[in-house]
Image 1 (cartoon, rainbow, N blue to C red):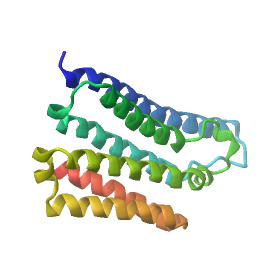
Image 2: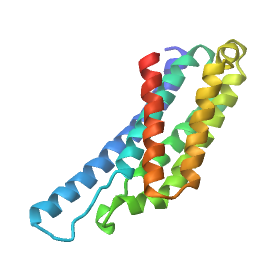
Image 3: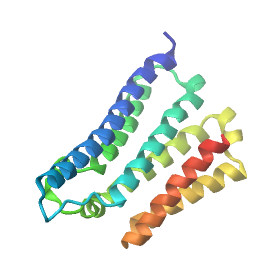
Image 4: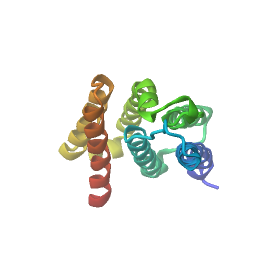
Length: 193
């Protein structure tokens, strides 16, 4: 077993649990909405658009961090520092994913209310992870040269700017536009790459 395989097993386990949290949260919200519709309750429950868009964005971001591990694979060595860094990094991701959907959707008439309660924290966690990722990658000379390109720097600046705007602006329409832009950025990068 290589050092990368040893470390990646822990990393992928925690990121996999993050993915399960996103899908489980969506499943709970859909199940609750369907049960209210089936019961014919007039005061319906609304998932809305913001929380599902946030879930898609977090999912795409999670995929990018999974891919990031592959880029760094030749530079990973087993050590207590590496294990601690992986646990902290992936645990922060799990926390962000866990907060996207409420554990009890019945407490909300609209999930947009939940979105506005947690979105700043989720974006803050994801911004901190981007900073940590860049600090790590810039510390590796062979990766640094490929990272400091106009496209990479501008796409990261756009990413950070959109997330900062999402943390500041509080109108539903602005949030929807920002989330769609964040998702589109990832989809464009995935298609180009």
